[in-house]
Structure formats: C-alpha cells, structure tokens
Image (cartoon, rainbow, N blue to C red; front, side, top):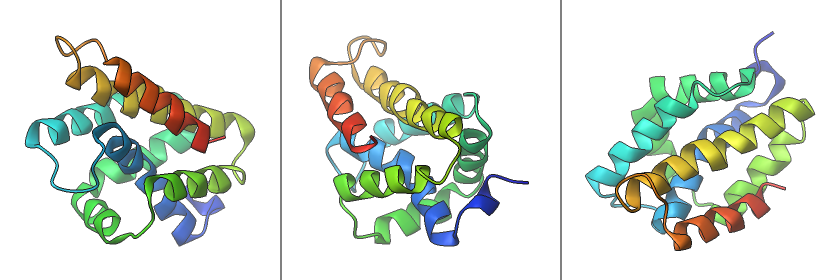
Length: 142
C-alpha cells in the first residue's frame, strides 16, 4: 500500500506543499525567489529525498518529479506559512507516528537547514536568524 493512498488528494497536496512553506519561511518570501535560493531549495529537496521513511520518499519523489506543476499550485494556494504548516501537522496526525516524525525531521533538518546553510556563511553555516526561524517553524508542526 502506498503512503499516498492513506490521504485524500487535498491532504496529499498539503504534504507536497510542506517543503515549499519551509523554504518560504527561511527566505521570508512567498514569491520572486532569487535563482540561487531556488537552486539551494532544489538541492535540499534532492538530498532530503534520501532521508528515511516511506512517506518522506513518496512525497519528495512526487515533488521532484512534478516540481513545476506543484510550484504553480503552491503559488495559487492562499494559506500563510503558519496556516499551511498547521495543516501539515493535522494531516500528519493520520500517518503512523514514526512516519510523521521522520517527515517533520526531513522538513526542518533536511529542507529547511539545507536552504539555511546554503544561504549562510561559506554555504555551510546557517545564520542565527535562520536558525531561529527554523525553531519557530518547527513549533507549527507539533
């Protein structure tokens, strides 16, 4: 049974949008991304796709495979970062606990930290502001 089959199409889309909300939170922007920031996001998605968990792999495989379509759908979504991440937390309540925890960890330590480090000093150290942003964002996922 695929992980996607556990969720409605709207819930699955919410999970697909989760990395985009993390990216937007780190950047402090919903649109008009700098090409270098977007490249860092793409690299972070690819790296995070190797994270443990079936749910992580299925969601990130779909996001990387259908990146342009999901990006367009995300741009049309009217949820704020906070509302979106709270919706992600609600959807994850339907997943097995271990899969949900792996998914949250991937979002913060994989995607968020990956983008933050790329933006930070020497491309490997995240700024204190980005670190605090990720701490705050993690609270929305609880």
